[in-house]
Length: 311
Image (cartoon, rainbow, N blue to C red; front, side, top):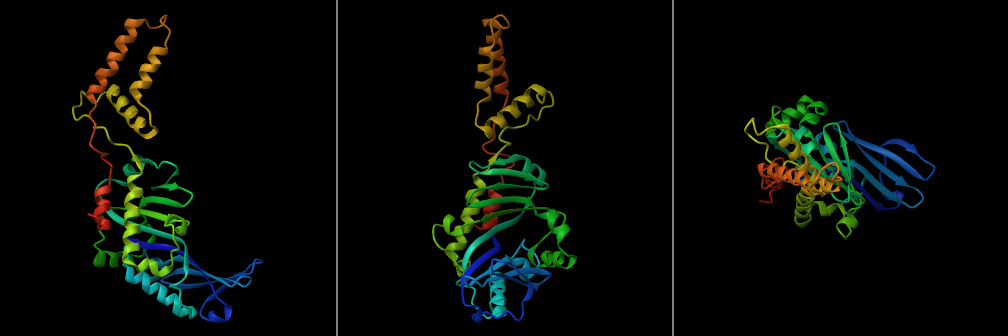
């Protein structure tokens, strides 16, 4: 697991901050002066409010320090904070964390498109599918799942990819996924104030790992029913029933009960009692052909658990 985007806040008099090495960007009518600091072609935004003396830092710490956010050690995140603190001559480790992203990048043997198609929703969150990824949006946090292998090839320089191969075991021939949580209100989610130095506390680090695992397990998945191996059994009728069963799991209904209820509602002028009985027998016969797995064939909890070191 690594930390990624962060937004921090602290209140300090302007004469305690050194702005000389920052790049001025703009000043707005609400009193905010906007600056930036660049490293590895990635910006960290520094903002200062002259009205209430608030200092904010925003940006991706791993991209700033290493040019990528896929595989990073905590000591590199700490180094990024030290560089920022030295640049403005102010200790940022005691700043309050207003927003935080944590995530993990891991190898998968299943093609990412099948993962996104099978990971459908989380109760109480809005699902948004997009190209090569999926996001679940909530009031306190968002969860994002995307094709990291594709992004690494498109966004990273050859030099950074070679460094990942040499130092992190990255293989461009394999598929990689990135699973992230964005805490929009860390103090509400963790039920306590989160400050920057918490990121380097072993207990907090483990709590973030457990959260990643628990949030992944909340995702409603398809793929619980076995596809028949026999070509003859793989007929349209059977596949149709498998699809109904998968949708039943996703949306919380029983296909069998719904179909039997529909049959019962048909007037006897269309279907007499014997006709209805035969159709219900047909449903039972098809149902017996369908075998369920113990879990979804697209479930990645074991890979995630191993990557997080929670086994």
